[in-house]
Length: 371
Image (cartoon, rainbow, N blue to C red; front, side):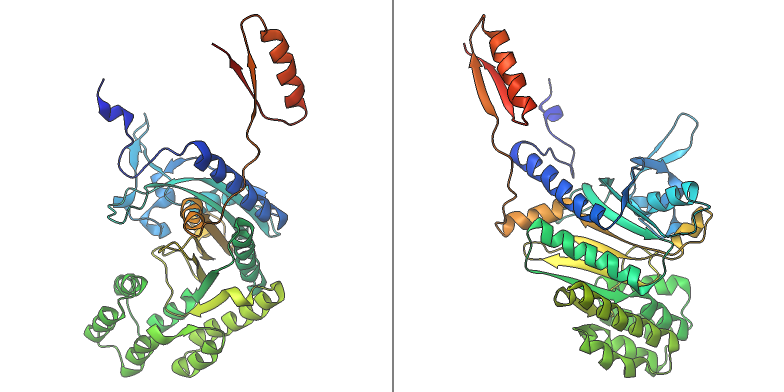
């Protein structure tokens, strides 16, 4: 037998013993938080037709998808992201629904990326989607829900960084930037490479006013008072002003939730997912160089599946969150160890009856035959 079959492929791993038990406890704890907000669970398939995650959707690039074929020759992919699957399900099963729908989920996602930072290719996500509500109150609910998830996990030191993709789109529209270059500039800004983004704009002949806005982007971050400082920068662009004013109203509602202390703003915050249309946010904590939660508004995504409906959602990356908890030495309490009942040959019936009785009381029992 080859030793290779004892190992997992690159980018995936086994989770076992105490770590697995703690992950399951964390999943249940966070899922219960989301359920308390009135969200109903939904399960979608681990693989879908390729078009559910196609280029038009604005999700993961094709080269980063795990693709395969069914017996009829259809191209299928392992889901890299659960939000498009939920959007498809909503369009199918809630086509005639007029009221807002709240859905939540947990499951694994798969991304076939080349990563030199040790990121896994299979990760567990737990998320919530509030569909058919375009209000700022819906934005605030999803962010408050994320804050409560962090608190429930045991975190005390964390921050939710909030932006608005409508701000970036408004500036690009004013500059008459085509879609191809808009995507290129967005990619540079996502990686915080503002210098190259400005160089691209200069090459496109952008006005001094537009260049000034992008020069200011790295500094348009901070607490809510930054939003007031940002308004003069985009004076004369009503859509950009409206994007900032929506963030100001969002903060007021988050204060009512008691979440204001955990929120900061970043007008240069964007996502590699192109389906976001409004507010966008990342959640950070100590012990993780990556966001452990993400979310935002995607008012156009569901229309790809045949129904126009605004939506906003969030997702917590369980693996990154659990790693951050370990590094912060925040313990997830596990249930008591199982009681061990030792028995010898001929005493099986007595041992079994005792185990059955204890298990009926909710106790964990392990039967071990003595040698």
